[in-house]
Image 1 (cartoon, rainbow, N blue to C red):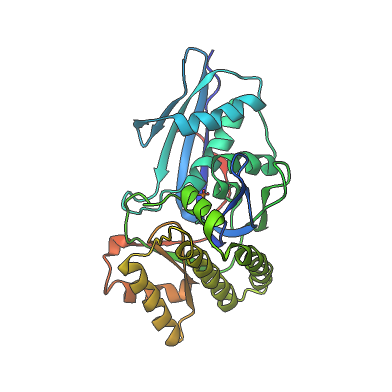
Image 2: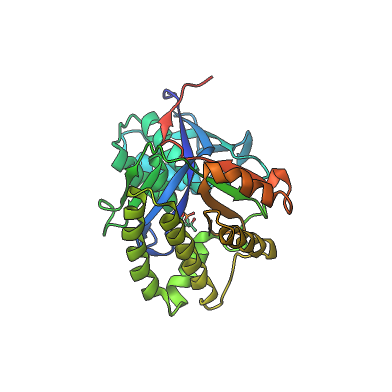
Length: 325
Ligand code: PMV
């Protein structure tokens, strides 16, 4: 038996209010709610079909056979929810420039959640898809929707999922990704956030402050106040990175060039350009700004960075099924 194949496309997202810490490692329930912007430029296409002749799941990424252990764990979850017990062929293509260093588990698990559930004969609602994607990677719960998205932390498996804040935003904003290092992260987000939860004396303050930032940024988004959204975004990211520096052992994702970009953004701001940075579990910097200002910012970045290191993205759509070519 071979099931009908389904192919899904999901875009990556960048958190403006970060998810940094789990309350439940198995269910992937976060300590705090988070909020992100889904981007148009970077996405993953994933095709899934089940095959009763297979002895295990087979996983291909960009046409290369990969170790399927993590993906198989996720597929077990899909199988446990459906009637279908066969193993699957899973083929993913990451549409992120190979030099980007931005490959994201968010788009990967959001696309896999939709393709695998449909191939298994399930028609999950968007909140159900978000809950399923969450089990692959927390941030994937948010890539189910486009535009601005909030992942409501909830208190159990049923109540922890993402909701759209503004799916089809007509706001003329963008994010410039400055790619500093495309190597794999030295400390994965899973290990980094756990170390922080267990050892940072500032962790309780983070939870309180992140909830406060979330309320404030939702208001600022509604008011189309880029200055306010940017300030909250940048400060929230710095609080997350301060947690890393206060963990034991302490760690940091910053490279010298990371700080150089941060200083340039601050300089541009002092010249009256409205731009703000955010950083995730790696040294690359993402700059939030208006489309109008992006040209000048790119020009200034191009003095120090190669064109290939500068990628511009706009708000993107939620997960969708696509026709196979
Ligand atoms: O979803 P994960 O396990 O890759 O963790 C994502 C963590 C951050 O990117 C740093 C923050 C976020 O909310 O996306």
